[in-house]
Length: 322
Length: 239
Image (tube, rainbow over all chains, first blue to last red):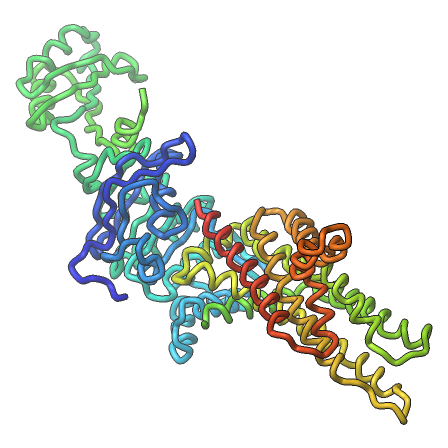
């Protein structure tokens, strides 16, 4: 019954899922060790929800295996599910129940002992900021509070693993920040795997990112590594010092002549009389030498900024299908 | 078992929180009351016979009406995903729903007891009211309700649409009610098989005040079959 110690919290091996002729997952393999907060990314229809449904036992795989806390989800679904708290994508709730009734019901199904039940409900209500809502019908709650109820339901039995399917979708920016903070708090002590479309969310909360596309894993790394690239790009804007117009070719030659720079392209700018360049470099940061050579050539450096690769860039690069 | 009772409790509470509960129970009491007193005033006889003759047909309608939303609604609202990802077996979900409907029927039957008692009171002083058939009748109704609920529950598990659940449940229950009436058209050997399959035939046995294991076995098997089918359908509704 209890979790096998030493086993990874999630172990997915060669998972395949077909819905009729549609292949949702094709040979997905990954592991999540205990205590990690993982962002699970991918375009719509990539298989994120399907993977989560298989882990929670709501969907069955076509082939391959999935285990939670060392327990195979097919072989012993009841034992596996005891370790899981699950917030589904649509977060379905019993509209006619009060928040308190609903959590009571979940506690009873989860077999939380009666003597611990009310204490535990009080804890999660406080944690999820539902204090003023416990006597309200769920059907009357705002989307943000409904999401909190769903989260309260998922953490009620103090599970080791939280599976959150798009926990912030459909929320307004304030609610997103609130729910994100709540997830970050929970993530300090639990293993969390969450899917989302908002990449900044992952950058802030997750220590690891899994990106899947068309049912296959295309990236598995930390957000830092995924946004790191060899060399980079500088945007440079130069202007003449004393009214004599600048010659485009001359400046371009000067920039290309720098040892770190690999490629120079013109870059559209709006400043009158100034010239813009997009400077690609590999290896060393060329900002110092760009500055010095611009000064030496008697020009003014109006602007110089380094372009950072965002998770969005990486995501688009890995998941665009052309 | 606590997950089963939790599900049953939730279902019963949600039933009595909706106005449909009182409409359903009200119509049930009104019709059953009419059957009770019909014999009393028209025939001038203090007997439950008329009621027990017509009650099975009443249940053919009321059992599916009670069960139609039990699983269809969960599928429609998506809450089925919540239940099916809890650390419980599918059969626990089914049994909890079954128990809820059975308790509601039992409450309905309990509310008809005043009718029975008043009929018993009206019995002439020199002749005593025969309690055997009355007790047998109530037990039989409860057993029959159990099998109808199991069938209705299966019907409810088949689609997201309550109305579809109701109509399939109604047809199923009616088929098991009417099947022995078709026995006349069949050869004797087939006829007895059809008779054994009839819910009403076994009910009439029990309502006579005679408790035969064959009748009990029939109701238990039909209920069990319904619950098993429901569990299997629910399992296959997983994606």
